[in-house]
Image (cartoon, rainbow, N blue to C red; front, side):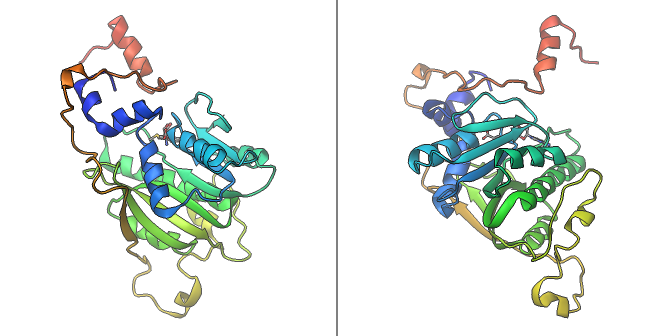
Length: 301
Ligand SMILES: C[S@@+](CC[C@H](N)C(=O)[O-])C[C@H]1O[C@@H](n2cnc3c(N)ncnc32)[C@H](O)[C@@H]1O
């Protein structure tokens, strides 16, 4: 976003710059933590789809400064390169590739993670069904990686879009975690379908050893996890094989705080100084288009 008047009036965007966060998303993780205490007492953390790095900044501040844990380990993964953050090991990689899991495990010395989060969003194509499908695949990839690295009892947080079949995902997650909550932080625009699943208390089925392999389908991966068959449910004939569940929905953050959908007229608006971004994008997908535009090569046909 440039130095437009919107820049001055989107309060979370402006606050992020004032407080030194690389993106306004920082407030989403902070508000999720305020509500669920998800960052308390964690030591080994994986931040998936982490660029430009505001969640990693929050994690770094929380673990090293607030909790004073010098031996904590934070690994941040993204397709895009990330500028360094104190105490965070960054990996430029695809979370859907099995090698990425190996790299994270090497950094953790084979130890499991206490907390995995994913704020992943693929580039949108504009084709609604395709975009929804790719987003769903990204969440599944984050979940698969998580099941291979998260310790029993650990927490998984991921961005979701509350589309048509989201109740299927809630249902499947409830076989893997003790609690599954759909949370909407105040800083996430109310007009957007974006929300976050907060999955607490990882409980993999005993004897299930998930492994990531190229060309393994999602069905093959979850074989043995007994999703849809756990507990007493195996004794019932379910009329609908597609089991659906409604997760508890919790709005979090100070509900009296500013509205993330609103633009505000600031006092003496014209005098409000435009702030530079905390971190310029390293390799944005629109970089090539901007270069072409500058050269005059971008023509509308
Ligand atoms: C909304 S941004 C994340 C913002 C970040 N949480 C922060 O606070 O700065 C979404 C990110 O997902 C990344 N992403 C999308 N697909 C990915 C994949 N397959 N592997 C790794 N990263 C991916 C994108 O490159 C993008 O940086």
